[in-house]
Image (cartoon, rainbow, N blue to C red; front, side, top):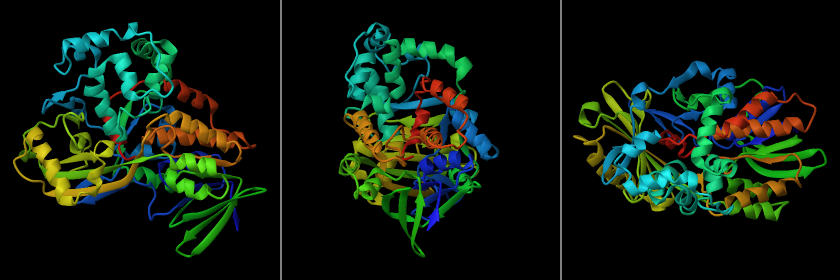
Length: 485
């Protein structure tokens, strides 16, 4: 039986980020991944000259620890920055047409998206002195602070597009932690944003949106190949047992069972899988994990000749409020975002369907998915011909739903973990679903492990800079890239 410093169960971005931070401190780290490739749902695929992403399509970053990982891992040389043309516009589906989404307060008041009443309600935000309950939903929080129009025309599609969730059920503190923190600290969102704009000049990273040459798979493959990380595919964790020196784990592998021992085990699998590993020793934490629901998402990639699409495609893409689309939550114009996503003279459009809004979509056959999606896109983008390339990716359990009093559930899980030293649960049901969030959380759990023993800790100053950057509020259509991460 092999002895390790840390065993990580799950080779998605949560497990890879955690292992990277630990391995650079000289620990012996092993990662078990049940599938044949690293990255979990993240997978870049070439088809007929088009580069498609099965899940995360880009990384939108403003955190210093993410910047450090990209630089120190060598990924800086593979970065593919967002094209300037993608900055031209961000769109929202409004009254059956695509309307430019204003990104500045002044432009918002000139936009036809909001009525005069809605604009006046926004101006009243600094004078709203009420506070909501801890389990307040996104719809309740946004309506209370910014009004119903802001909810329906901006925040609801944001929640549906980035989290595949229902704004009327999603916990505001879990889904919009930076906004709720602004209210708690400053009493007003606008006041908090103003203060943070002043402070971030000295403390926070500038926002950077990028992918990598060869797609997001380049990132996870590079991290998996990091010296000091023993990344093992085809290792499905079957049993986790406590013993006097820590933990003993057994995996089913193509070559039979394998058992290792480690003082620390980090479980980064989805909640149902984690619950299955913990059934032998804690009923309460298992019940909490099994209570986490997941949304299904279907992703349709369509490649088409550029001259067959009359819309200028001069932006990131668009989000769709539920009042405008029953099944489509958003569409990314990938060939506008990055230069290597489509052959010359072609464009790549990636659509996101289903989620909590329409869970039945994941069971549709390919023909229905294509027909329903194209019926929407043709009218909005003015197609003259059908796509020449189509790829459909389905995720039965794409994203955890932060529904109900989600913060209380996570606090209860954290509380139970105190009784099991050396066991860490770290997946996208804790602390955010984006690649940025997962890297940041990997940094945090690595620090927790390192601080518990006489091992060199990660730079504390960088950790404090990271904490200060949490006050920065980024609210853009770019965040659609978080879907199915």
